[in-house]
Length: 336
Ligand code: SF4
Ligand code: SF4
Image 1 (tube, rainbow, N blue to C red):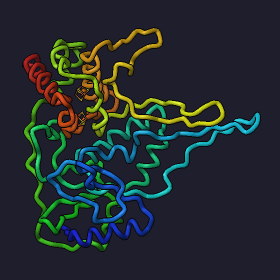
Image 2 (cartoon, protein in one colour):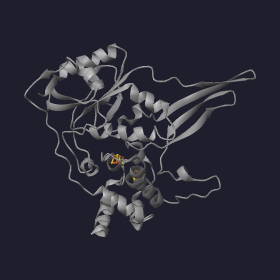
Image 3 (spheres, rainbow, N blue to C red):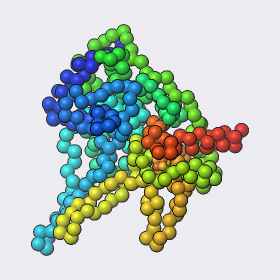
Image 4 (cartoon, rainbow, N blue to C red):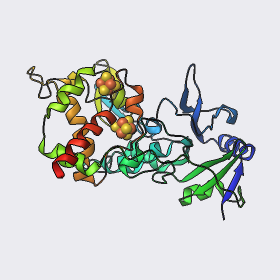
């Protein structure tokens, strides 16, 4: 039997979480756009399944800048202190399903050759309540990577809009059940989700083509539009490159992990001056090959949820979708 919750009841629950000292983050109006942010009052939440926020929930697990440790001198003594772990439980509400689906994919790399306790601590203390999409645009391609507008991957529970004042509640994990236990009522009505966007390419054909076409001329052509701004990587829920920098002076300072981008020329610049990825074509090949060939070989998952953010944010409307469509066509031709 479907379970439903009214919007008023949901906001009362959010008020309760905030009152218990939990961090609650969700889409809220920023100065100009809808933005995932920590909220102070339940009324700040904008739970509209048709609007896409202009950032992703990635930053609540892998912050843009994160202090790893601090250092200081006390006379001749050097004192290094680890950063404190997250001390509050966090609830992410209103995540897009394609955003939440990035988390199980990222779990693999953050628990690989190094156990990233910062990321893992945030994952353990977080509950993700996603909001099923009620509309897809021309940049969405979740169905091309095996997902859908109401995919459950990475979500502990999901809200599906029934009408302006009611949501269907789908619960997938014990964490999700703990939040909604005794808060929903049974009903014979279900929420409406968007129709899946069309499958725009075959991901296996893309992977096969990338394996045998290192530095393909397609990238020379498509990258002419790319200015190397890196916006596509920062808005991507699955991109996870970072740099580690010491900030401060000889007496005291901190070691900080900052987001980085493979689309920056400095990303692979050697101290000698040599750069093995010497232009945007090489950087774009690397980004797409990493997502669709290398990561799947290593971790068994495509490093892309088809959210379309990278094309929406790109001043040249590039991102990965237009390139994947071209590669997919080439790959299909070679396979047939
Ligand atoms: S593809 Fe677009 S968003 Fe990405 S680096 Fe190039 S210009 Fe910037
Ligand atoms: S590569 Fe683009 S479409 Fe894929 S997850 Fe990242 S932002 Fe979304």
